Length: 322
Image (tube, rainbow, N blue to C red; front, side, top):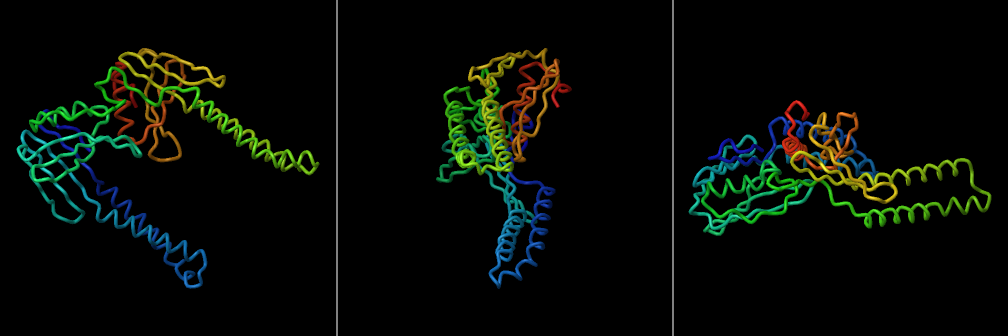
């Protein structure tokens, strides 16, 4: 997805590049080839044959997605929208929509793996067209206003967007709630006690072995780490011009706050935020050497856009934003 090239043109894209398609097709082919030998076990009803069948079907689905997924581009210029759709190895199917054919435009917010904003265009003929997602999650209000100006339409009603650069402050994460964390902690304690009952009974009856003691201690350590993770996951960032305010719960259940100015920041990076490849965090490295990680964001493009907006608000140059 690309941002607007200039004030008189907005480009919205959706699709996958040729390299991404080739990688996806390669994975699908390898998966299918690995599954074929296992089909010999299917006749006997063995689980290996059933697993091979599911792997083959999944590989075929991946191959179909690589071959038949569409690439869509909207080019919005004064008074018109040029829509181009193309499948791999196919011709581009163009469609031109003039502004006098448009009866309405609205903004839709989608919350899935990541927060996306898309424009819904309704035509006089009764068609409803969904545009590709807006390219920059921090510039949604600016981009929709620009599109409305180009098409000579009223600006659509804005949707709540905590990352929008038009806000006085952008927010990452959810406001800290000690009640929610206390509920999570109580649930973990209840679960830990329930799982400990067999070990307590074995200890009372004198049948608790050294292995049982080791497993019990390992479970206690895991429960403690989960409780610590819950507190770390309650981080909340408020970014204003010149400063970031951090809020999180301490292990004692009190709310800890801290404020960092732009002069205190050495560098801002985007880092992996978990096991899932689509999760990222913004890491703020202070001049003191301390690193503060943001709540998890989904999507590398979205995370990079938010990092760029944070850098702009703190007055950092590009060399301090990795």
